[in-house]
Length: 144
Length: 110
Image 1: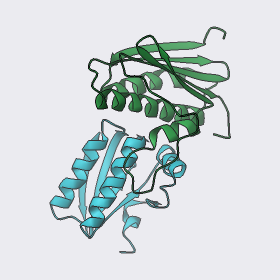
Image 2 (image 1 turned 90 degrees about the horizontal axis):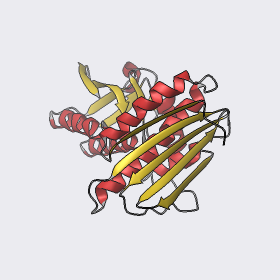
Image 3 (image 1 turned 30 degrees about the vertical axis):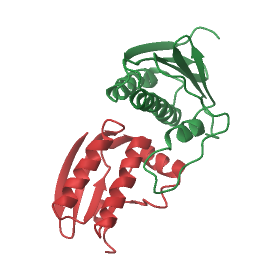
Image 4 (image 1 turned 60 degrees about the vertical axis):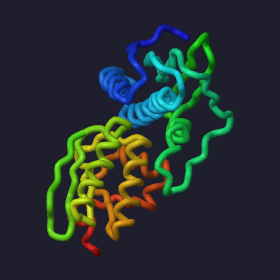
């Protein structure tokens, strides 16, 4: 993949406040990228927040302590890419099949289903003691 | 997230300002629980200044709706922007939480 047009990175503990940190970073990077319109920006931001939120919940529900998140965004020509490392987290299995939306009365369980609707690709792989999430959205993809 | 309460005739309006994400979702629940605890039954959430909502915020909204209905009241939403509307539509919850065009419109039929 060629060098990105823009790249930003932030790292911190896996706590809810990290979601605001990641959103602040997106708010700085996306409006500066000439090819990225509001529709792509809005969809990519939501997908990223859902995946970061999933990582925060994952860290808080397990026995592990001191999980750190390392979040990186890259703007490429025609593509947005984000990587999220869950450092020190228990392995996470991302089902191959898209997640289903829960019942209307459910108060949780929609995050990854939403993210998958908004992304062109999503993957989660084990790297050393980390889970590496890679998210992409092709710009101008009207289908999603 | 900042909440501003406005007592109107027949309902209260709660204006939520900022991002309704995992950080703010418990704050929304607490604000609505407090309103119901204070005896209010009809609550309009004014999203004029809510520029972002994720699934945590949506889950909190569903929780608020359930609590209000159990108390014999209702929660309605007004003035939603494009991002909040997108989340409601992608999850199918626009059928359950239909957005109203203004705070005044939300309980006009009640």
